[in-house]
Image (cartoon, rainbow, N blue to C red; front, side, top):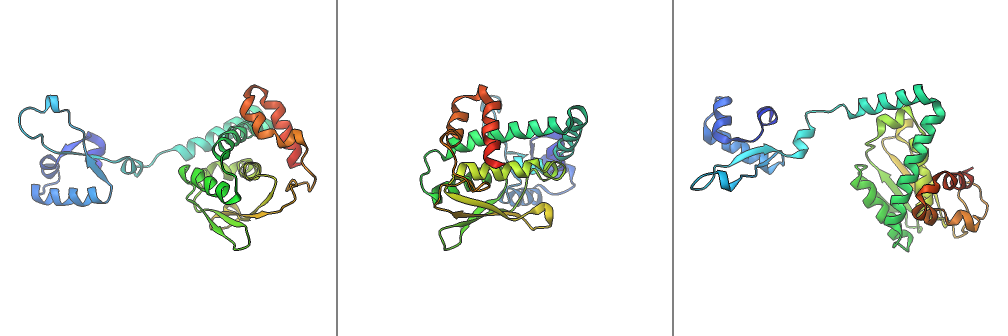
Length: 244
């Protein structure tokens, strides 16, 4: 893998020479690595391969490239700490709020055709799973669900700025609708094995955090956010009123 990472696609015979192995033995290793998703056949330019069948070359898969490590977590930590140093806590809060609104807009679009709670929850599972949260949902046999995230790909950022976690809960509440209650059940940053949320129908059409009926202007937040990005600040104010 190190040779393929450093030199790019290589043939079995060349790898065998580098590692003092027989070509047959190397092909057996490559076959196993291919079956395990570690390597793949490299694309060959037929126009430059000459006559006859082109020799097979092997390259790393995207997953294998990721095993060599990266500094994304460290960079994220440094960027948040730098933003706090330059712009203060208020500046970091504004960044988190902006990300929250963008996520809300994206999720609202994705869930716009989901009418039942089951459909909404399942679509949210799909969205979060695609983002690397290893999401799933379990029915509680009482019309509700336990929404589970077995992995947190932004754990480093959340550990130094828990506004990300508060924003996550707020987005879930908004896109799942006023007819359900969403409460955190497990929390990774408080020693939990994972993050999970209990989702229950409330059949009242009430705000989950205030217990007051949501007015018509506030209930149109998601639609307005989708239609008028330029009015971001006013939408944010309406959204915060719901959550206070």
